[in-house]
Length: 597
Image (cartoon, rainbow, N blue to C red):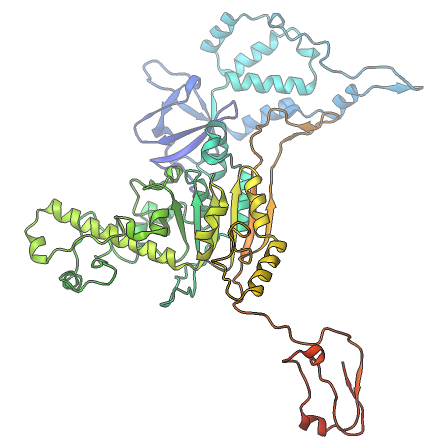
């Protein structure tokens, strides 16, 4: 988490109305925050977050206002002066009826008889506007309160709400907040809730917790020829929330932001020069080595793969551990929300951790890779022919090969499977998605699916229920010719043996007003869809039948006489493979009876 404001970063301004304004801090620019005014962005650079600022009146000849840091003592004094709407014991006693002899002597103080009219304010709107031009916000509020004719009729809580409204209207204050996933969710729920499928902060936390996304300590995965993974963690993500789910998972993996030391250049290099595949990068075009050039002359690899160029900062070789692989339906992924954290998929920053730890591929590349033009190897040219080209054509040639190599690496690695978990947040029905993604998850992996409504997830729980699993196993046992692939898809659209303990859950944190005698949920809180999360564990079915061992009948005591034992454990009922004493062992048994349980 950054400690101070840096240039070219996104952040939030908490306005007096408690709403958020998203801005980008660019040097030598003017930031306009509506009716509060405008100020120069240079005045915020290098300052810490979570400070409250107040815009001062513009001096003569100034184009914008200057912000002033509001000290904590001033903020605390304002809260202490109004008790923030919390009634003291003396105030509570005034609002409780006094009973004597069974009768009520006094009615509690309330606002039933209060007439909320503009005539109670003796100042006119024109006079208030003149005060705003001549005095600061606190002085304007003090004069408005002094000219209110019915202020004493209000209760303590009503006075506090009145003060909050006046402060949000006349004080030119804002609080600088860093760009965080929680703040971004709050901002988008007010502006574009449909863009993120109305995911709330607690729902995103539920998805991250059940998916068990974490950093594995930096150990790189090692795979053999069969694709088995020997270390490291990888997650498969279907994200159609604009990149919100990817950002939340990347934050849990500590790859959402650049390293502070790398960003500031304390050691004289960047994050990419130290961590991008262990190779230094540059802006210039990188040609192939002599070894790769000899491969380009005709000794290229199978499947039409082109020669492997030297890693380049624009198309580096992806990381093999602690990665997120995002599936998308279009040609380019929709991860536009990642730009608020310093990573734009259209113009990627090579020094950002997501440049190598975030992999994207389309459904076409996953299901039919040979039909995708990027996966197909571009034509090869001889070194002699390349030497005759102009620099622009050579740069385009190497860029195509680097893009193809990166695409081929991501597609082949994804199709090999062994992912640690699957996370889905898509408006599509999850039932058609799982047949293509579930086989890519290794045994014991987590499956987490978000849906705004419960109906698709309830149907999914039925498809993986215990009763349907038992019927599926019985069907396969009754007919040896049946396989999970050729069963009736109307009865079993999915293989119910692949997921264990499917669960549906939801979580919603509601704001409450807690006051003596007036405790209730906040009536102005936002509605919308509840949001539900499906969780399960991937299991690998045992191939072949399962033979039970042991005698599960009567567990009474059986005694054998001298010379042998008539029955051994597990022999009852015609079973085989049980535990029984051999003839040699039985011959050694003498006089003492043998108890077999």
